Length: 412
Ligand SMILES: Cc1ncc(COP(=O)(O)O)c(C=O)c1O
Ligand SMILES: Nc1c(O)cccc1C(=O)C[C@H](N)C(=O)O
Image 1 (spheres, rainbow, N blue to C red):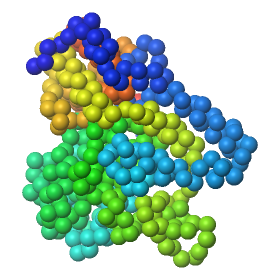
Image 2 (cartoon, rainbow, N blue to C red; image 1 turned 45 degrees about the horizontal axis):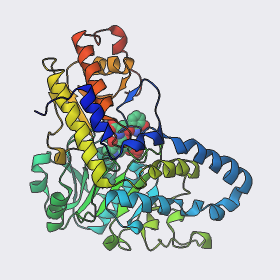
Image 3 (cartoon, rainbow, N blue to C red; image 1 turned 90 degrees about the vertical axis):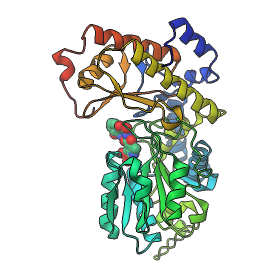
Image 4 (spheres, helix red, strand yellow; image 1 turned 120 degrees about the vertical axis):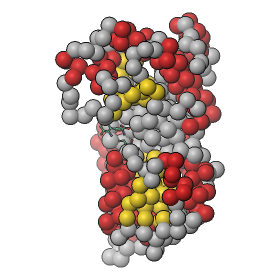
């Protein structure tokens, strides 16, 4: 077990952190330790100005001319190119569009149709619900079956009937990170395609889609990319599949020449064919501001800080909170996890609520998981240290054992 440092030692880690100045790019409320950036990223300082400029000057003054004048029409590809640098893709392989759920649908249908005769989509139990729900919808749409295999049995479950392997790279609950390269090799050896959900990886850990020879990927804009609630998502299609895979949502923005207004659909030659309708430009402006927070950030620094923050929290729970019934469910090996740490506890819900009341915002995931997200751009080592102290205090005083902390809202 790594030793838990003193507060001064945690502060020394912050002083030596190459990303220490990045926190100033965000608005974080006073007195709150925000450990939920893996669900909703914090507000970048530049976002309000960027959105205000878009609304008042671009929309308000330049109106429809802004599609050309302010590059609105290019926003999906421009933002995609920026995200590409965070996930190890080429700039023309990523585009911003729709929601993660809708993008899973588009790419999974396209993948199944690109593997005719194959009868299964393979995923894992406990994958993020939307991935499984959309996969069953895709299965019904294209006439295949959704097959579920436990993580340790996944590779062996890939066979000549598998059209696509749909996995979340970093598991939303446990934080477990799949070996993208190894699973991709195994899938491709059997002729299957891989579709990775990067919602909990992009902007949190180093992702190397092309280094892993991945086929397809999707991811969220509102978590580590800081695009704001409901931000548009992104999708990746490896260049070798461009021109071969077709979107089932053949909207006009994915047409080769949208402004030719032809009756017949002809898909754009590259990644743009995976657009459907008009991009949400106001939300795009917020996402662009969020992604700009990664300018000049080395992915290696991000990955190293994520690992160190998670290690610190694990060490803290296991020393300061020992004997209080927590079970670590996140891998200890930094290479096998993302940027959040989860512990199981039979009172996880009220403990989470008590922590929030004491200024530490993490989240609860049913049935018994307390999840803490460590966003490398703005979480300090001191924050993790204090969060552990407060958790220890909440447990010692049984502060969680209060009826007010058992009240559940619609969103947990
Ligand atoms: C792994 C994963 N995929 C997808 C989503 C969400 O998709 P959507 O933005 O379509 O709601 C989330 C979080 O909500 C997630 O954790
Ligand atoms: N997308 C969310 C929402 O609309 C409301 C509340 C939470 C979310 C989330 O993003 C949940 C998140 N994907 C998770 O990993 O649990």
